[in-house]
Image 1 (cartoon, rainbow, N blue to C red):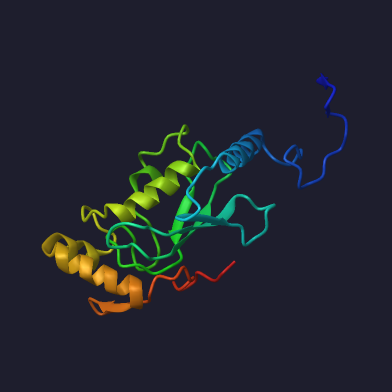
Image 2: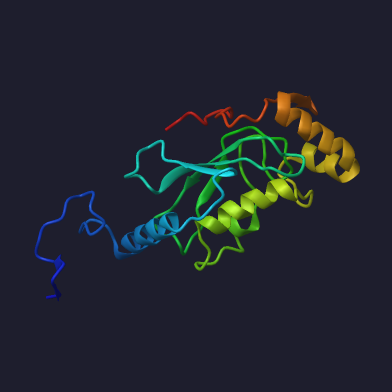
Length: 196
């Protein structure tokens, strides 16, 4: 039996405890890694805000508000939901935009196309890596393999027109390619984004 002055393995644990017998070692390791990643985040407060709308005891589900200060998305406030699987860091978090945005890598349902959320993910990456990746999407949007084909097409064929459309939609809202994109003030404005 493990003996340590601060650990008594004979003591019963509560279901919410990270050492609960009902949780697998993988789940425990993932939870500890997530706690470590979140505690070590050193992000600029003017550009990034973490929110825990489901309570601080549900760390595996949180929101990130991004506020780019450069590029055509500058001045916008974009809300993303992170769902971290029990298998983290072996598997990446699931990330979905909750704020509608005219962006080649974000479709109209909030799905985000970022290689590090899929095939390029490695267990040595962290939540911070994902947040910086999202921030990079707004600083350097790319039209290759677009999830939002209207945004990708306009960006590819008319970059100045794309920039104007984005700036207008971010600041005051705009109809682009037949779809209205509300101003980017960090609201949950995608269908289903208010569901728990």
